[in-house]
Image 1 (cartoon, rainbow, N blue to C red):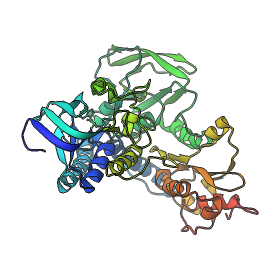
Image 2 (cartoon, helix red, strand yellow; image 1 turned 180 degrees about the vertical axis):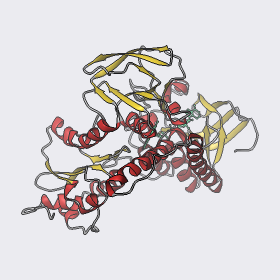
Image 3 (spheres, rainbow, N blue to C red; image 1 turned 90 degrees about the vertical axis):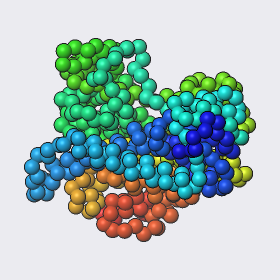
Length: 469
Ligand code: FAD
């Protein structure tokens, strides 16, 4: 923490210590810029570390372990039904977070980045007012807004019940509810639903749109939907929640749409219907920074707003609201501030759904290509052909490569299956480097791995190409 004084001066202020904010701050400090982070939280890490990516993956790892112990039965190994000590599960999750919080604090100290706890609002384009901490005002030359986003509430439904939680509440895991309704079939809803289903809750998912994981190709979503159909009690697409009221022993929910859930009273309701930017909480009017109709701060490719000394990155500037996009923008803005001519123009930003199986894609999807009328060559392979997938008993996967006709340039890759999220990085590099299907096909991949399937799929795109298996 910065020294106890009421006014603090800095060259660069970063509002928000999440993945965007701390990446930008650490990089800028590395370039020799005197940098300060202000965050309402008492620890660094933002939503991602404290109530998003990391706690959800910690709990998913536990749910995966339970699932693996069941799966082992098909391999001739039987475990007893696990006993879940919720207090110890939460202690372990908190330990993971605290360790990473400490790592960030140590890095800030090493780079001489001042960290101030408090909530900042703009007074003018060179000052913020800070509440909730020891410092009252910060004077800065330049500022990066990395204040992130928060969960959206259900439109038109007012309910104040401890049984109705958002992602932050769900991750606290105070108890294992007997039945859970997850509202929203996007990645956050499905990840949280998988955790509670893994712990033994009866889970129902409702999604307003006609499929789960909006934006994902159907063939990639299919193996996941098939598995979730077994794991969850019901998945109801094209279905909306129209009302909720607290009743004895639960929350009574009313629905409208294509498939009305059998159950209408739930022990817990998890609302995962999206996130909105925190731009409305910063008094941006004081500096005249422009936002779009969805509240995202408008920036150019150098992450600069319409106010010359004000930059913005991360969830607060728009989709995809993902930590790695925020970090990428953080790196770019630090370079821009260090007077380097760079722009944020990635060839792709990967998306991963950390369910079981995982779904990951990068670059152009088949759905996007069809909608935009872009001609593409598509080749795919089911994992039944993979020796490694068979050895681990998980052939429920698919690897798909999308190329530009004529040149063979890789435009997109989609993978569904075990560890798809780890395997997509090779495709990101291929897309970023402008690689062709031939480049991937001619790269020798280790055998037996599931990752080698991508080179086989690429090889099938070559003249005379045929699957090896
Ligand atoms: P944030 O991480 O939101 O950080 C913003 C910070 O600003 C916060 O610490 C906040 O306290 C602070 N702040 C806000 N307003 C003020 C103010 N006025 N003054 C001072 N401080 C302020 N993304 C992935 O890439 N992979 C995942 O697996 C993934 N899983 C997720 C799971 C869940 C359950 C959730 C909710 C999100 C997940 N995300 C994931 C999204 C990811 O968390 C966000 O994209 C990422 O945190 C955005 O980073 P950011 O730096 O823009 O802001």
